[in-house]
Length: 357
Image (cartoon, rainbow, N blue to C red; front, top):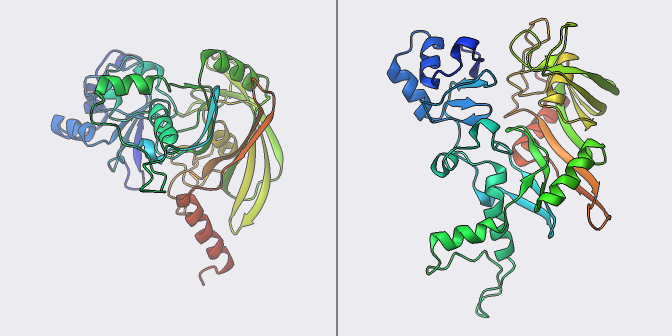
């Protein structure tokens, strides 16, 4: 791993399939001892498919993507950090904080409860967040006028509490990247999940993202075929005529909002929802997202230096608009930049107005 890199990206080969994580890391991390490998895993420095992995014995597949970070990853997000902006009997709209995976990866569907709790997903945390949300509307005795979340009563057993939590289970109908913040919809019943899924496939859900990029792109539409590996180990546009089972059409509409020195604030509207779609389209056009550690190079391999100082990838799901699948009324939600990116964006604007001499 080079000094300038935040993490090492590893794609398992055919020979790695069925081998344990620790064995593969020992081979790939040249000069590292078995103790170094185990320490990296236990100190929260290893992710598989965007999720923290503390299991050295996990068996790998060809679909896995491993990241070995230079620094330890932060502790899991708490349910109290999840803001619920709309909830009814059928669906929930939340403000997803950064640093949390939307849903559990398919390869981790059989993980034990203890291992899930090491890094819970938003889908897994939302039931407890809903309990806290509804409790916040229950007033305490007349001695207090403050509305505060009620604590679980001492006489309630863990099993009873888990049963209560289960009543608030949700179903994810779309995803956001781990480090992307913003608005997300969850269904509360399988029937509503199917209805919302159809709406997404028919492009009846308006999704607008805000992004800060290097350069000054013009309003345009990206419409091409994306594949899991474009030839340099990362997702990207298909470059050959050979058949690829991972290929998917991806469409993104972008328009500039604000020029900020060497950077631009742009709006990105999704027509399809492919993995890393916005990040890929912008980067391959020569306008990489600020703070994006993966798609910071052109398809030819040329790396684009990022001197923006962004605390994470500057991508945020800012607007959601759709018709309620039961009532039919139009629901529209907007979420401003979260504090970390807002403070950084303000400093970027200040630097653009008063550039260093």
